[in-house]
Image (cartoon, rainbow, N blue to C red):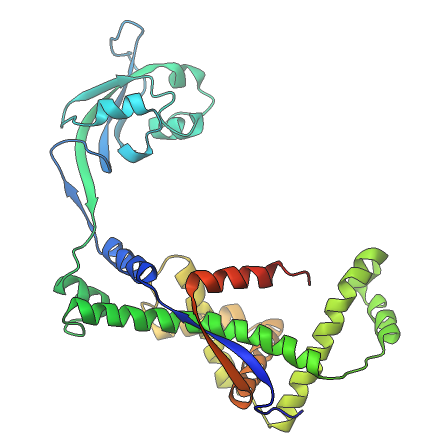
Length: 340
């Protein structure tokens, strides 16, 4: 099919604003912050201490619940009256309370006390909580030490350069989102522009012969059929672009994509990107993706589609639009909410 600059498709450049830049800075200062000991309990403090079960007369219960070095976050205490008892307390001070309404429910209190959540007697008792340790999390200062930790020693030498690096990081991260939005818009535009008549009745009969559709109710099938037709049209368009432009995908490209997916999974588990040995990534990618025929096929399809979209991006006229991340997300939410 003919792709040229007569075809215009929007491309959204996400522009970092001060709020977004500050969020990135806050993320870095939080990541490299430290827990420091303090003399008394203040807002935001974390406390460790011993829970001792008490009798009705205030004496310690013999063989009662004793939980040592139980952690309590002041900001997590729901009962404002109890919270005030903690504020200003020091090491070896004790707080006496039932702690019944201190947290989000019996299950959380039971976990803190180290008892079963159905232990009504333990959960209804009064306790003495003896403070043994008080700490507060302090974010890292925005200085040379932080710059070196985030970007490597000597790579950034001022707060201005730090912000410039963050802006570049934001733009790089947001480019994937911009490209994905472009792929949706390109797909919609090209399908609308291509006059493609398909044998709908034949395709319906063919689909209904497939096992996955035999048990589908007629109204559900009719509702999903337009999406199937759209998918078929896009497959035919991409196949034509691949053929006309001799687009190819190599095994090494598929392997690289599998490794990329693997690293993305690790990042989702909370591990920092770039911290995994290449051999480990390749081994995991092989086990999870490259040894499974259906996964390999899926990776090839994804890589072909990526190359098609990249070709379209270079061939048509881009109607470039600057947009804030908030504005982009709102627009993108509307795209996701549209019926299939």
